[in-house]
Image (cartoon, rainbow, N blue to C red; front, side, top):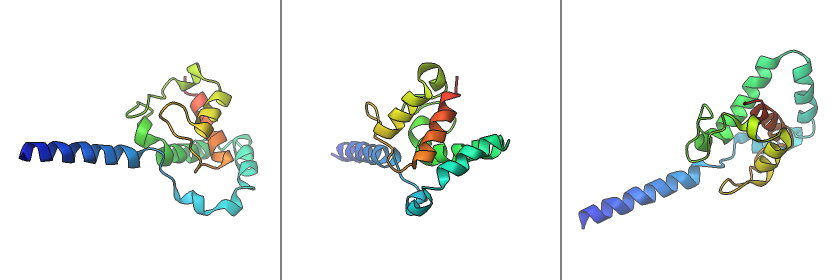
Length: 127
């Protein structure tokens, strides 16, 4: 009987961990008024030659929204590895998957359009 209780607790804990780990939102949801200005700022950042700052911003978006399922280094986990995503999907296909979800991956509605676009471009470069 005690062994059965531990198994139930283990399965329940694992299920809870999976359900809360994927698709979590960030504090950025509380800033919708800046959303209209963000795309223009992010579009001009790569032209300004500040690629490291843009990469850091995209990596932060990835870490806060994707890494719990796809791994901190794109190596996979509960979700598939994203290391060669750019050789499998175009930027537009990646953007669509992030926006609408695919398979067991839910739509990532907590991301702004600019965050989603920069994340898809970054993932498309992973070849």
